[in-house]
Image (cartoon, rainbow, N blue to C red; front, side, top):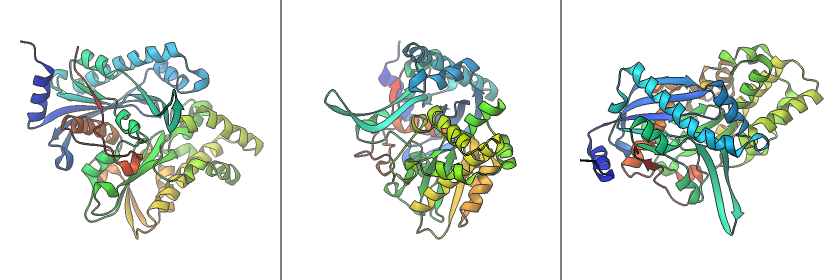
Length: 401
């Protein structure tokens, strides 16, 4: 007898625990992160156990097409249509490979949380056909992925918040609050991906006291320079930045960007800091006679450090001290981490592994937890962080076809 959607949902909701796969591919467009997480409970009672994690690099063709279609000048509607399906297959292959490496059958998965690949993020209201709309496009089809893997999928985590007047981002602060709030210390959870984002958790805070926002470029400009001048995807260990000299005039130009002074809630992406911004950066560098490519990387990295530290201090100025936990690819960049230690003199700066979470895995785990929150019917947006009128249940649900 064929199971109905009600049968499937009832089994999932009433299970004592669930094996959930979390999938994340971010603005760095380096690859696909997959986390296999055993989850018990939900909401404030959520308990997680990471079983396995794996990063699968994007095929060069996929990466090239994603970059091209993240820019208005080079996007193509046929490519976007094809990428929507192609990414579903890439995500499925990444989950299958992660399960093989973990010795877990794909059929053992109860649920998958898939963020999708952001092509465009337009969270500010625009008038179209008499309606005020906000939009964010993440490609990769939930129904396709569910059918490819024969596993239910929760996807499209941003839309509910957007329609309630929010930015649809950041999404991870709810999970940061569930898993990492503390009664003893002020905590800042910093993720340095292509874009950097922070979650501030005052000691003993309630959900409505959480502050979270994007700070601007994390690795995005650094990575763009590394690809252009060195043929590498990123600055390993911050070695190139560490061998360069920061140009103060070029740095001053970078720090004048209005996004840094925009108060939260705020979010951003390649729309502000993609290829057009990189071209402007290089144009200004030429005008200032900054020709050493190591100096360019060092200056971009210093801008990341200063923009993050300045914005943290601006909203946490009353804190006498805090702990800063770093995750994402930037946690492996010594130039960035050492710079944050210097800039945040009243903070203890450590990577997220101190909290029992490998720095590379945090966002993939977050989408496994957000899928579980959808299943349990829990709201997962934080209006103070996104600007929405009220908290919302985030996500859409796809059953295998």
